Length: 338
Image (cartoon, rainbow, N blue to C red; front, side, top):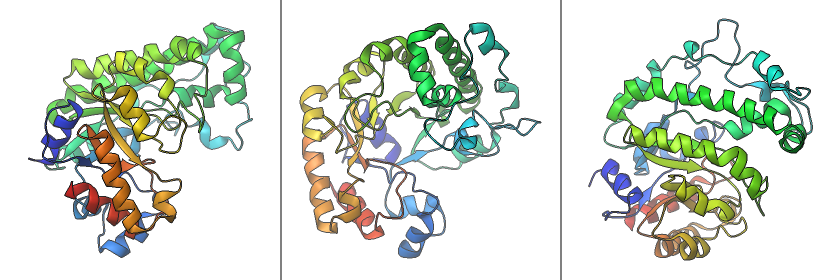
């Protein structure tokens, strides 16, 4: 069975020859450490050395994708901010008309050539693509965290107008990519972090009003092109997993293992057989401080609980330099031997 077929089957909850494995997307500061340890020179070589089945190829990860002639980035107000409490450029906006006057990104400045080239040369691995579409964080940055939380209740129409501009941009951007990529893409992988270590960042009612309708639209768009739908959210999102399944999400990532109610046994009990899982190997404690044998044991334990609809991966895909390469090797070895 090819890696591509393996992951496709797992996400559609059909039989596969083993559980899947994704190395994740190591942080740029981590890659030199891993390349030295494994004798590799590129991320693709590292994936192949560790027998990783899954590739994340998003145009949003590539600098060549958005080319505004004035040098503006794609929803890049975050880089000008220095604290969570700092106000964003929409903080003082009080009307929908104000929102309409903001200088929004334009799809005419998008270029997908580099992404398409990578998709074409990836080999028979599972290709997760599409715009990352972190609309929740984009809008939060545009208002500032505190203003965003307040305006959902004081001027909800303003928040809805900003969400509409951001999300419609990503929906149009996906159309441009999906039409050109066709069956080069297997799954639409998009993400926002909706949870903290203990709960959702916003109440379920606000989630249903401001967030869930857009998740539903993104999922429907991807499925209309024949793609599987994988959603990323760090933190505790247990409270809304039922809603996500109903919205069309087929696979949930990254299963932050130490967050409240995100332990494998709880997920299996409450949602097993209804959704596939990607992640689950703790990066807060285990992968940093555990022994290689402890990690092998945990991979087997998680697989026993969540298999067969499981792709083993770190519970935070951007592996940091504090995760020893020997522990990554142990995770990969155990996952690909199952």
